Each structure stands twice: as C-alpha cells, then as structure tokens.
Amino acid sequence: MSRWWRAAAGVLKTAAETPVRRSYHTIQAVPREISGHRIAVRERAQGRIPAVVFSQSYVQTDPNDPTSVAASSSVSRKQLLTTERKQIKAILKDINLPFFCSTTFPLQIRAGSGSSTILETKKVLPIKIHTNEDGDIMNLVFVWAEDGTELKVDVPIVYKGEDVCPGLKKGGCLRKIRTSLRYMSLAEHIPAKIEVDVSKLDIGDGVSMHDVVVHPSLKLLSKNETLPICKIMPTYVENVKST
Image (cartoon, rainbow, N blue to C red):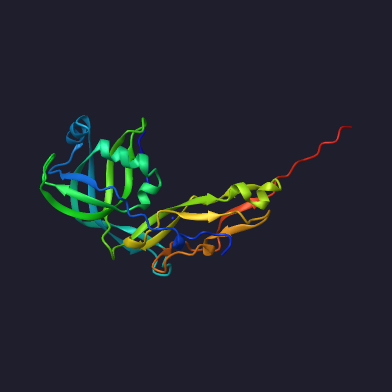
C-alpha cells in the first residue's frame, strides 16, 4: 500500500517568532512531455522522480463558514516535471517530514538533463509526497508559491521545554492533542513550524489554538479556536491495599 504525506506570552514561542523557512536548496527539474504508468516506471528506473506543479485555487464550501476552505477541482499553470531522486533524498535528509511540506523552495526548470539552459525559476511549495510501502518516493506534487499567493498549509507543531516543565516534574504527562495547525497563508509568510513552549505549564494547564500568535496574514482554518493543542494531565496512581 502506498502513502501520501500532506501537504499548521511566557508559554508560547509563537510562529511569529519562528523564522519563515526559505530553503537554501534549489530543486532542479526538467520538463516532462507526457505522463502515464510506463513513463513513470522508466523515470524511476533511471533515478528520477515524476513530479507535477500547478496553481491551486480554493473555494468556500459553506457560505456561512469562512473556515470551510477546500481546494478547487480546477487548476491552472500545470506543468509535468522530472526531478532527481538523489537531490530530493538529500533535501529530505536535511528537512524532514512534515517540515518539507511547510517550506517553500526555489524551483529551477532546465531545458534537459545536464543542460545549462534555465527555462524558468520560481518558488514552489510541496503539498504531497507519494511513497510506496518500502518508503521509496514515487511522485511529488508542488504548487506555485510566488509572493502574494494564498495557500492552504498544515504547519507542524514542535513542543519544547518538557525537560523543565513544572507539571511534568510533578509527575504529570503531556498530552499532545495536535501535531499541526491548518492555515490559509500568503506564501511568503508560511512558517516552517510552530513552537509550543511548555516550560511554564503546571498540571491542568494547557495551550489552545487561540493562544498561538502568527503573522496577521495567516487565517486559522478551525471553527473553534478555543480547542486545545496540548494539556498537562495528572497521572493517577491507584493505591491497592492488601486485605
């Protein structure tokens, strides 16, 4: 079976304080004229990964709910590409999932394999990585991510401060309710991650979605911003008395 990886004061180090990750990696690609299973198999056998990039538009599925944003079925500026497996694996070694899908990359499209002629250079955001059951990358999906482009993105949450958390030192446990938060964001303001600092949380304390401060252009796609991200829970030990 194959898998798709998709492509979210005093307590928090917010996403606004976390630098937007603009990768120093430039993804190299060449145009691919045709698609199909046999073509993809041949590309992979030669150490390449089939890819596609397009412009994604969004629609509001519920007129009364501004958070009901879904990708439109129509796309534009679609381009078939081929990338080098060796380079993509090197990037993923440096930028692990899921941060790969919250990082924008320069994409350089060359005329052909080994060619020095550059056809186009623009920014993209990875939104899907298709892997097989052995973990081999089968396909990549990108969207154009030029400045001013609004995109839907899941920003990963990273928890820090657990080693000095008062609640944990008292025997509590950290319940990590969310691993990411989903936003609509301008491409240039997509944070690579959101750091949630639990170093001052006691037993019973928690962090909610509305506690996270991000760039004003980011719109949280949640109907209820009071939902918790994490909470320090007590650990109950039942004392069993011998009779």
